[in-house]
Image (cartoon, rainbow, N blue to C red; front, side):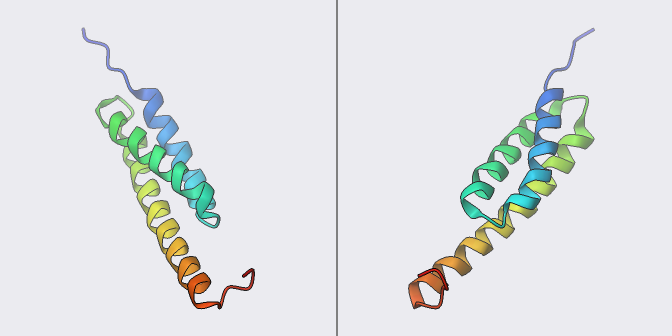
Length: 86
């Protein structure tokens, strides 16, 4: 019987996907968290924890899109002088 591996990657992807749903508010933290979660989720799709990997990939994609939108809005506001910190 062949032992399947990658269960830890699926769990890590799920955890990073959940963190990415929170971390998108700060793009500096949200971008690496969601990208790593996405990569680990894709690598964990072949494991016995496929459901966790799919959930991690889904949440990582949602967090990545939210992070990119947040970065884009912040860059636009900074470039036009509308950002309150600049």
